[in-house]
Length: 417
Image (cartoon, rainbow, N blue to C red):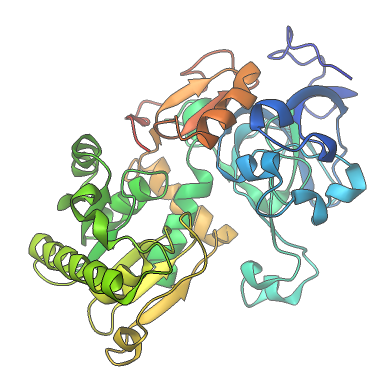
């Protein structure tokens, strides 16, 4: 059923009571394809909270690439797993800020009216891994708003109570919805997985992107130094503002990128460029990096393994250029380097990271805030790589800047990508 967006920012019920239906941007299996076609606004029944669950009225939502994949049905359709088969539809959105509207049985920490942000890791409370190892190790682990039905591109969303964090009072709704997925991922990668320490030197790929802007700030806050790889000098200027010791325009070293299937002669030439790149990194940092912050994958991974110092660490959370990695493993074992995989963050890591936002020691970096009627357009821009950084979507909020209740520097408005 088509939804009426004319009263999107008003709700007929008070906190504690849910309306019958809501407006939501919905993807269905029979229309997978371009985001502009796959996303459609529908009127959907508002879910009730189960035990230890919370319904949040969404004030703003953040856009991430995972729901471009959801729209395309590639590389894996979301309808093959999670709770999608039960409901037959997908409401995306893995970042949100909003107001607690109704709590389920057993929830004691949160109450209707609380202002919150949402982290996107879910796991069953019954899995033993949740209670001693790490929720990321639980077989039930999934990313809310991607591997689940009820994401943030709707007036209301359903989450586990453990997903909630206090909304930073110095941020507006759209700013508070812009950072969770990428920032919390970067925090786990550097702080808990790579064990970042004062004095460390760090190489950050894609330093002006959604992950990189937070990695750059975290390195600075930890008393370490970073050099960021960017695609333009303008983006280099941004990361210098965020605390980088220097930047490298990757176009100067385009020949280092691994395409796969290189001939011996081509690989020899590529390796030579990678060597030159590593020399430049050492010149900026004073010596080879202790840590390489990786999320590009196929194109850069051989250079990462080559460039990191002996006994150094390459920490990786994704592979935007391809997940089949081909590199010279001699530089790994003979120099005793480490490769560390990392995936999002647990509730404790999200809590500690969010405190840095509350203290303005780390700041969101936001490109644009768009209206709820532009959700499909925002994902199409991202699919076509026409965006320049993080996008927030107004849902319950009526305008940018709403929701700030304390003075503070707020988000950095910048064109990044």
